[in-house]
Amino acid sequence: MRIYQHFSVVGFCNTYLIGSKKGSEAILIDPGHVDTELIHLIESNEFKLKHVLLTHRHKTHTAGIGTLAKIYNPTIYASSFASYEYPVKPISDHQVLTLSGLEVEVIHVPGHSLDSLVYKIDHALFTGDTLMCGRVGTTTGYREQALLLQSIWKRVMSLDENILLFPGHGTASKLRIERMFNHQLLELGAITKERQNWRETE
Amino acid sequence: MFNFKTCEKPPCNTYICGEGPFCFRHSPNKEDLYKSCLASLLGDSDVIDLSITGAEFENLTLPKKGFVSSNMAWCTFRDIDFSACTFITSFFDFCLFENCRFNGINSRYSIFSGSKMIGCDFSGSSITHTNFVGIDTLNCNFGDCDLYYSNFGTSYLRDTDFIDCNLKKADFSHTNQRRVSFRYSNYEEARH
Image 1 (cartoon, each protein chain N blue to C red):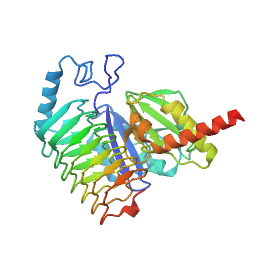
Image 2: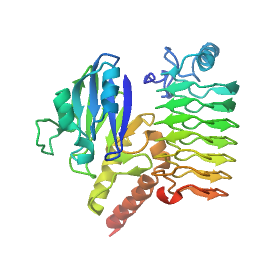
Image 3: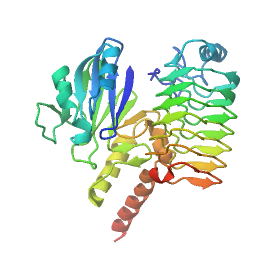
Image 4: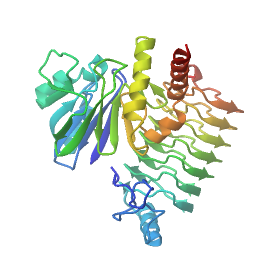
């Protein structure tokens, strides 16, 4: 499997291009912005872009869809919890898709947004804005933050710690690294646990 | 990307080395694997999709080498010259780097997290989108580096210089710093 990372200064979003080999069908995750560099990446590998996966609805992760649709007309997959102005194939938690010869596991990790999805392809995890290197995604309130932390611990941190992590913003990582050094995850996790214990002893 | 199969020796779940079913540490033909790895490190072509974990390398010069989608986590590097090398989506997490030279390297989307770096020189390099989370540094030099979007969060920095660097969008949050210099760098533009 080949994974190419593309960074765009428009929205500072990471876009990932995944294909099994040169000339094969390919998947694109979170086209935040489509520029000539991304097109060159697709074309130089002779990829046939067939599928686009969206981690969530935010503009910084989806703004390039229009351009891509005009050039490649790919099938777009997104959470069934969100609605879009263009046709998408709704997907939900625990679903396993076979796209471009690759098995894609869909994991629902709400908190940053209700429709946040994480995609697991082999030993690579594409986390969007849920879990990033050294921090967790932003939330709109304490309840959403608690939900995000709970979802991350339950659905993401329970996976093999050797898994590679490719977030929507910032640098790539591994689950082991986040387990050891993600300050927000460790600190906020302890606070949430404390709150829970406090409630239980009431 | 390197092979995602994990070692067959229970309970080890490290990524395998070469084609075999075992990781480097549990491989019965460790010497052959080491030799072939050394050959690819010293050869003319770039290191692509290589995976070797927990190996030790000493006194090597790897000029203008490209490391692409490779995994060299848990390795030890002593007196290695990585100058002018390129690192793209390569994993060097939890390594030990002792007296290594990284002058003029180009690193993008690579990972050095959890590594210990003693007497390493990264000066004059372009190190963007690179993960240094949780590193321990002692007597290291990142002078004149472009560290755009690189993450040093939760790291333990001692006698380390970041002089005249671009730190835009770099992350130094929750770091433990002693005798660290950010002279002529835009530290205020970094997250800290």
